[in-house]
Length: 286
Image (cartoon, rainbow, N blue to C red):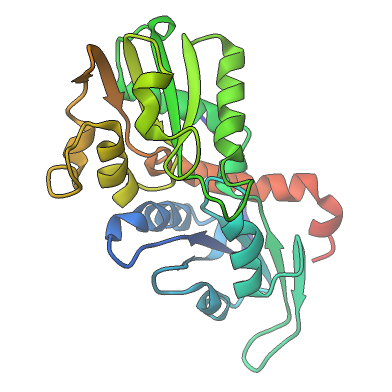
């Protein structure tokens, strides 16, 4: 299957912190991060596994007090390298770069924090995107289909949409789909313009998000035109089970968010292994 993890991978004296965004209005936002952490905890690869969130408890500022290990790996469960991974998380956790050394405090030893890349930077995200597209539109010939990868987009950081654009380029290079496009909620090209921007009779839409929250349940369905207004009709997993949608003489297939895939636990673990492999001098300095 995808993302095989080294079966001998063990960090029995280290802690893992998985950071998500969370939400004050939708518990589904944090659910994948918590489930992936539970799976990693079940495997026993780390001495400690905890989660932290921007919009929920425990907060980013609390998580370091929740682990006692001297070596701590931090993996952002975010799709893109942007505002949160470059600004918010380093500020809230007091990170000084890839590796941060913290002096001992009463009740806690001196610690080394290792800041891994966000999950969206994993080199095999393309496989997960294609896997999700295939699940949403089984039996559809990709050669007759447009694949639309949807990101949030933001004016706060120009790198926010970069992960979507990189995936579009990767999949275009495979020549598998008739066309591959990236679209966004808050920057051009906008999701609302999908009918003008795509030409194929079949259109497959995959949200490039880490969770099925309000964006994938409510906002994007309205922007696509498969729901009239945000609300109960668009606020459940049923929105993903009604494929295909017939709009403008074409069939549209809508997938759940990529980050809800159970295989993401492997992605998180692999980001730790990639950190050690790419920065052996930093890993040995712990």
